Image: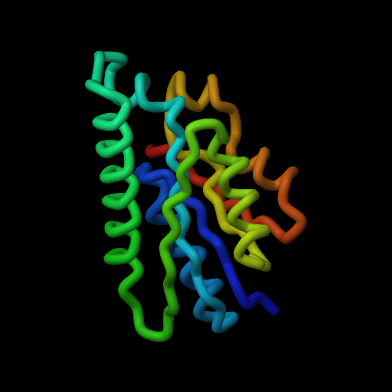
Length: 152
């Protein structure tokens, strides 16, 4: 039924559960699992305490390295037999994460998007809104939203 599944992760603790759900679906459907992480330059000041961070080139280098680290950790987490994985680092200084994910879905012929109900906490979540909801409104394929439970 599904041939290409894209799982969008943000590097939060909730991403591990979302990855597990996506991996199970990919194995069941013998689908390619595309693990995507969108770099959202608008988050840099909030994620790094708002302190001056150096030149734009320095910021982008750190930003990219963090994204690559998120994808490397996901690949390690998903080291399972019978699971085909590709990683995709999405980068734009003008598009929000949801737009980048929607563009990747179209460009890669994705049949199903798996995304967590929320990842980041606090003010970032309030300001940014729900990436999952915005992705679901923008893509034409099915979207599986993984409910992420708050810690007890």
